[in-house]
Image (cartoon, rainbow, N blue to C red):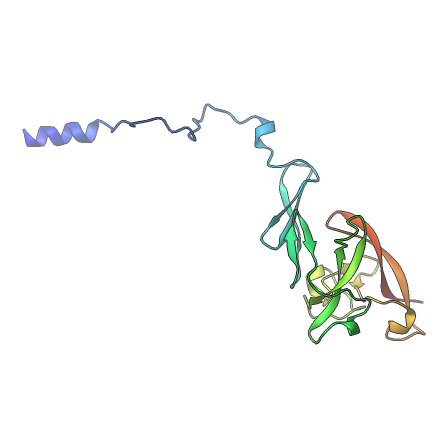
Amino acid sequence: MLRAMWVVVLLVPPACTEPNPDYRAASDAVSPVDAAECATGQRRCVGLITQVCSGAGQWTNERRCPTPSTCTAGVCVPAGDPCDTDAQCGIGQACGVFVNPQHPNSLSTYCIQTVGTRPGLYPCGEDEQCRSGVCLQRAPSFCFDACQSSDDCPSKSTHKCMEQKLTVNGVQGAVHSCMKIN
């Protein structure tokens, strides 16, 4: 008799006591609208990483906010002092580019802890290689080197302080950087 009871217990699955409102059966197909995680161009933060929604409706990592900044609504918010050159920042710091918190449609430069090891004007392939956290994607690409005038550049005969157009966290603007001249 005891053996027969165990067979019945093993063959009869237990029933749910109440329905699970979060359960979706395989037959509950997700429509393409429901499948999209975001709207194109939408921005968000995941910790200190800014993300932007791609045309495919998927979140894409865009930028890691450099120390000592924070991330709010998909934009890195500077916490360091404003700067025009690396010399205005402390030891182990560089001038990095941010969306200006007072003028959200423009860019400005603020002191940050260095991101990479390459100083301004050195060749780069990605932002994380540069002390400033910005690799200017030109031909050839080089690390951003903040300046106010050509006097701030390494050599006035081979470098010039010029306005550079950039897009940072979805905002297009201009900042000054030293550039090699021919």
